[in-house]
Amino acid sequence: MDEQLTIGELAHRTGVATSALRYWEDLGLLPAPARVSGQRRYPPSAVELVGVVLLLRGVGFTLREVKAFVAARSPDGDGWRELYERKLAELDQRIAQAQVARTAIAHGLACPHENIFECANFTAGVTALLAGRSLEEAHAQVHSR
Amino acid sequence: MDEQLTIGELAHRTGVATSALRYWEDLGLLPAPARVSGQRRYPPSAVELVGVVLLLRGVGFTLREVKAFVAARSPDGDGWRELYERKLAELDQRIAQAQVARTAIAHGLACPHENIFECANFTAGVTALLAGRSLEEAHAQVHSR
DNA sequence: CAACGGCTTCAAGTACGCTTGAAGTCAACA
DNA sequence: TGTTGACTTCAAGCGTACTTGAAGCCGTTG
Image (cartoon, rainbow over all chains, first blue to last red; front, side, top):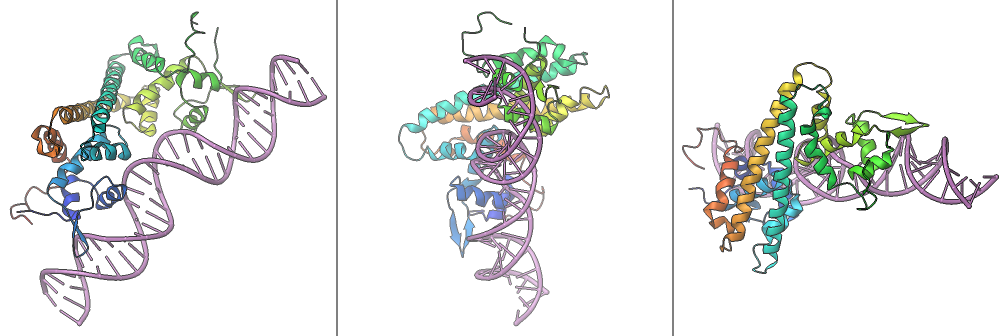
């Protein structure tokens, strides 16, 4: 049936603008497809490839990271395994943070306080987040505030 | 002890650059703090406020969305409740998507295929994602191409 | 044949989220 | 008193991820 897709059809099926698809190709994110009288013709599998890009971009990876991710698989070197494991760990962190945010918002909804910051439950996750970000020099904090 | 924080101290405790804090203030994301001879002095609660911004920004909300989120709480109107519920729903979607990505990557790691797209498990989540994004007009697809 | 829709390239513009640099103020300290 | 360090404003620059516009090619259709 549909052996090959024009860029318009691919855009239609993925919800990604044709301009974005060309941009992704320029970045090396999508492989340059075959051409018929100058026009791009994509194999049906391109739909899934675009889907993977959407998925990974959607969870916070940059296009360059996504590129490394999808490109890593072709050479059967061993680098990709480490990369995948790192990405997996990053993703787990993101998920954890998203769940912290989720409970914070949910608590914000349930909590009658007008000042949300007065709720310990609300600020608990925030404080944990900050603990990993503050530039404390480890000591100098033996005597807390 | 530390009643008031300078911008440098706030930056230090949150890991956010002073330039970024000023930028956030310009956007209206952070309230303009008190001044001592021209310099900003933040209440200790500013640390948590910055933390909330970090948390929400970190899960994919834009600064304008975060602004709406934190600003919504002050007027005791009823708009904020709807906003919070919407954000909560968005967040649940993000978490779900992140988990789809997680299982996809994990499967990519476990799967010996050199072409990941040949794994149904890998593409399953992608296909679901695309289903919600494709611009199909429902009919118009009876006769393909 | 002419017009139309969809494709092509290339350059420039846009939105977001900052950072950087210049030039200056201010309090503290030698 | 002078210099140091942290702060101030303002304008400009930067990286990411695109979009938009101009100018043109190509195949189908009236």
